[in-house]
Amino acid sequence: MIRSLVLKRKQLDEMIEHVDRCAPIEACGLLAGRDSRVDCVITVRNREQSPVRFVMDPIEQLNALEWIDSSGLELLGIFHSHPAGPETASPTDIQQAAYPVIHVILAKGKDGWRARGFWIEHEISEEVPLYVE
Image (cartoon, rainbow, N blue to C red):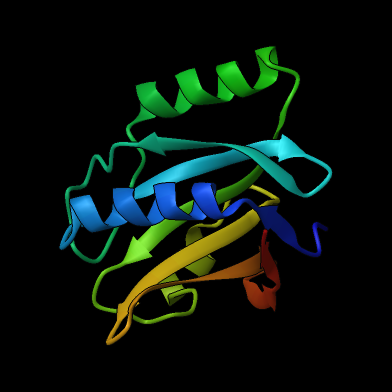
């Protein structure tokens, strides 16, 4: 189990720009790196084009996963937005979590986008820290 993620401010800003650009549709992507430290943010198109659900485009997702592997990186996280909330993993997020990675959820509040990390396993969601440097 990954206990935390370390992101650079630029990487968090990249995720925020992506989810803001896609709003009110949920946006999604992958986080690649090593040892809980993110090296790369990969945006992936939401095939559902829904404000309350995301399904990664399978071709883009496969290409991203192959690039991560060929670059010697690991899949550390999946991120997606909740443009209308909540700031936590939804029942759908929990039910459909298929990878042993941190799920970063970006939710829009009064003061802009906020990112929180969750480890989801056996249909249980546990918050984990995100460190931004």
